[in-house]
Image 1 (cartoon, one colour):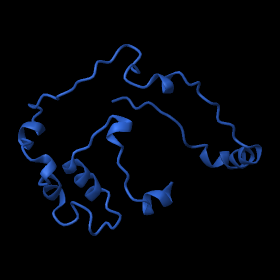
Image 2: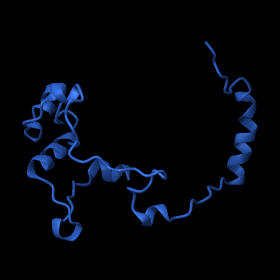
Image 3: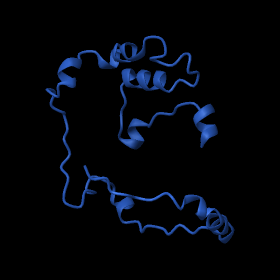
Length: 125
């Protein structure tokens, strides 16, 4: 995965196949934020002002946004489960148990005494 992040080119979803379209401005912003050479990356020279000055953010009232005066175009509804906005293919999957190899558990047990002074304590003011 690390090698892909470091070397693979960005790929965009196919609008017909995936039903997602991405504006050229958004592609440019994302591409420049994910520039592999950090010296060329958007924001490297002008920091936040350089990023917010990108064409993608044209027309955004940054002061109103910071003051939370801008209403979101889409506000999802969340039911009591908290997972109603996730794909059912994901939410139906059973959690898998992580199994730690015996040799790894033995190393952990050997090092337990190093952590005797660690623990949770509730601080009351």
